Image (cartoon, rainbow, N blue to C red):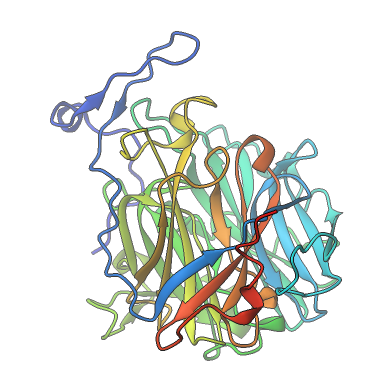
Length: 409
């Protein structure tokens, strides 16, 4: 059976006594001690398919906010959700691609962003629970012109020794007019709970074209020890799926419960859900996209660390005390894995970046150049884009279109 979903984030005193605690003092002199977990060394096999990665030296900043779940819609627009900007905890943006030129030296001016919905749901209705007074966008999916936005209700943590932004419940709302309005009663606000609270839709092509089958798939970050869901420094991802035409019917959802990725099995009982990806105290609220050019599912994972590469949530200490994150990139032949590592950076971004995402519209036909969207703290607290070139097995070098990635003025 799965872990219970109603436990709190705080570890029991007897459990804390058996763990090491790092003593720390914050900028204001306050005590900021935190639990010392094992160093953030990914336990995964190295990919033998994506053998090298080349990042473009330029990064582009647009809009404002973070999170950025996104989808390539039927109308050829990228829609994205954002959190904590313009005086609101969440809103919806429209991203129009003016030119797609991955081989260009710079990509300035090649897309345009506009906020189209400043408040997709009525906050006065959904931000009244004192245990979860905030909302954020977790996932976004367009199916033939219908937008589905998954929302998570959360707080900013209650464990002083490992403080993480906790998700307590989640639900899905639907838009029939390109995100201008959403039906707030599409599903009840406790559609998902506990370790299933944060729903992140797997992305395929335009309007969900090119999907592997008639299901919608979604990932759910969770902590395997307390059965809760967090925005940062989880243990694992669970995987759910539902027939696309029954996405808003909770009883139609089923969850991966296989013993290994080579023998997938499914159950309608969410308590039986088994991890499809595990990285102890270093699993983020991750986005996954299918890259048809190389026939692989791509996932960017993030986790926050201290100066000794020990997991430390970004909410444990104030900026700039908590500013380090690790980026790990993975590929898999199936949505449930096996996930293999093809890139690692132990000091990612300017001030600890997070939630990498790969828009399926911004992938070359051969799949060897992709654009990565992310956000971070301070001057990365916006829609950050960087190009990546992938060298795959059997190819002697990166694609010719990446020739300017190493440019030095």
